[in-house]
Image 1 (tube, rainbow, N blue to C red):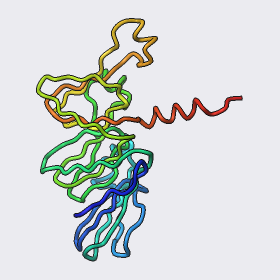
Image 2 (spheres, rainbow, N blue to C red; image 1 turned 30 degrees about the horizontal axis):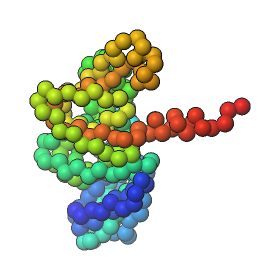
Image 3 (cartoon, rainbow, N blue to C red; image 1 turned 30 degrees about the vertical axis):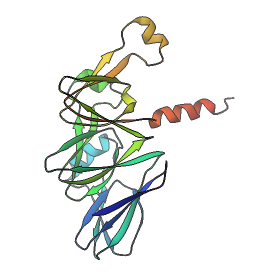
Image 4 (cartoon, rainbow, N blue to C red; image 1 turned 45 degrees about the vertical axis):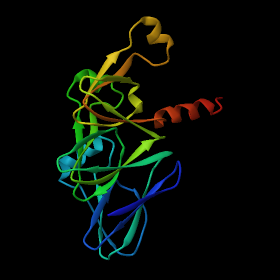
Length: 225
């Protein structure tokens, strides 16, 4: 499959498929397509898997587009300002994603819910107990809030991140929540009581403008009676 990412802060990814290829997306993710695709909407794995995805921020039903003609084009658009990040996953490769990060993927990719097993991470991690997980093989496209910053962590290397700025990380990375030290820091720094710690080895993708931060700033500008 060939693809082209078009646009700046409101991008779409245009994918060119051949006969027999298939690609699936979240509900409402398709922007336009040639008259060479058959649509199929289902739960992709059964009702329980659909409900699990719903808990991770996706809809219960996904839509698969089956290509009937070579060199046919279909496009998928980001739902908020940011960028679209392609990831090419080898067989068995796993990425953990923030809720709503998934946009589209080849039919060979598996999308499922990822459960935060640690209670503290689930309660205070900002994303709740359920995230998203994609498993290769295949090409997938992710929605990133703002721009994306990629970091590669060595074994034991740690970074501390405001939870909303985490877009994705490899499943070899350890994800935990720690408390901010010091009462003044907790109440006066503006960072809240908790930060996420990501410990290598593995890759981490950070985003520069979380949607909830952008929404909060817009709300602050709305006149209040």
